[in-house]
Length: 62
Figure: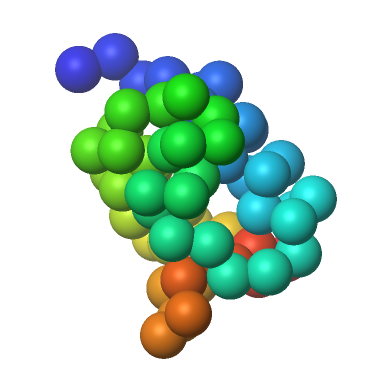
């Protein structure tokens, strides 16, 4: 699978802008990115320490 940097950027920018926990389904609805793609990208961003999964949803950590 090709690495899609643009999806990572879109997700990070949304989490920074909203400044609140967001669920993958909500991110998908707002961005138009497939929910499974959002979930995968969030896991990759988590491994890099850029986002964190909380009880209320995903947050930007930097």
